[in-house]
Image 1 (cartoon, rainbow, N blue to C red):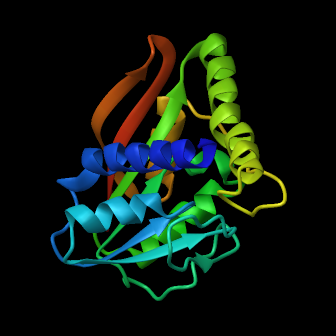
Image 2 (cartoon, helix red, strand yellow):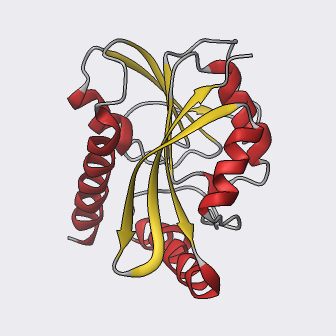
Length: 205
């Protein structure tokens, strides 16, 4: 019962997140999902965009949905320049210890837009809330998922260590060579935490 409930939550959450970015994706081409996780995001994406091809990459195999993900080291993407029509990255940067290197690699492999969803905080209270919220969705969620047999990896849950304000994120994207557009901002339960939906485009030089 718990396994079924967790899977339902993952399916529902992925469907909602993909709905937020769906209209900004190309109708055809190849999209790379960076930090693909359990695979539910691409599953939802394929339902909405059956003509899009997808490639999934991650640093660890925690697949629930059938399919394969390309494993990489977290900063160097094993793909050629301009290989993808677009890229998506949903709640990934908090786990990345070399965000600038990863973003520059995304800049290299994606010809089209990068659609990115990321949490931010404001003030000390917001920082504490965001750490606690990420702990629930990270270590706690994966521990429960392993207990009920939904996932078998990793041996230790991913633990977020990098948390950003909106200005820090914007600067990070610009330093990686992107023009930044904030498509939407969603507040989380009246707390000083927000979800931002970003569209990143390469800066023409």
